[in-house]
Length: 281
Image (cartoon, rainbow, N blue to C red; front, side, top):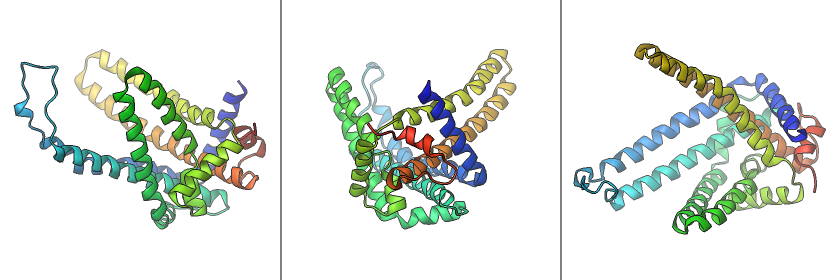
């Protein structure tokens, strides 16, 4: 219960900080829109290159042959999407860091700071994309045992890398040094980091759940027009929730890094709250 209460306090504090710079919530929205555009540029041509007409309909369990060009386009699309995601997370961390340091960030200043860190952000995006996909490929090839082992490794990598982007953006570290810093901070000041991250996800789920129940109820009513309108409203609402939770998570990430590296809670956060999230073991 203590961890849950602390997560709620941290979320509330992150929300209070976000209220001072609500425009930061636009960064996750821009990230999603640009990611969809990038995927469309690569994935659609990749799908078009597949010989769907050659698929033997008499053997429905078989998959259509995927040419090398499609695989290449899918990989390039995934890598480009990873770069977009890391860049905008970096922009969000940059904006949060500016606010927590007493500044007044804007979307423009946040993107400009992330742009200045491209030499670190882009290699990190490609490195993390490669590692995660290699681990997933091993999970698929090695069956249940591999799924358990490499699934745990993937989670461990994700946790160890949690503060890599703040290290790159705030302290201008390279991708490898940034990851080493992130792993070192978690190893020496381990606490409720993972619980807090899961907590933000749960908060988002709880916020979205009423909208999901509403669309199910509307769909059961049987009116196509009402269902479409309801679906559009719910989609907008879910997008807003995603943007807000992502922004709050980025603020928490920046605050946690600042506390872990300086030992002092940034403006707006209480030392006790962050100390509980990074309690020494």
